[in-house]
Image (tube, rainbow, N blue to C red):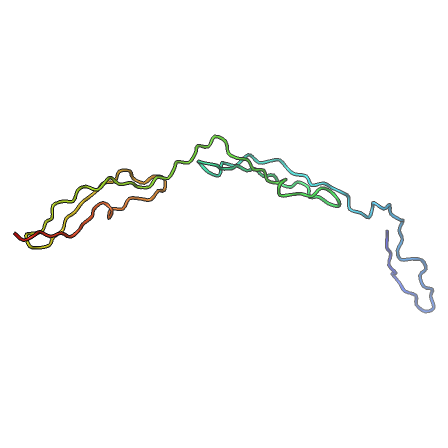
Length: 153
């Protein structure tokens, strides 16, 4: 289709322009439609590092859209742009281990004088410290104190 414009309108009894201001040939039906173009992707990136250093992790790789679809062409999808796989040869994660204590010792002798009150103590040791995020040992849990008394003679 082509267009033209009137450059000078009639004056002093002149004649008006004749003919159409627009001229064009009929188009083939597909000429007015957008071409069907399928989505096209670029090359994959290299696989990423594993998401974890132990246990079950994953790797991923990406690829860009090189040509976006148009018309009735196949659409681009997130699945087409991202690929994921489980990691290989990753060691299992070590198990958490909570602190453990030895058995309590016997109660120490009461420190009271005859006919009075005093105290006595017992203790225990850390048998196994916490590992891999387990519950840590508490220093306050290593000794116990209780009151005691000695009878009058």
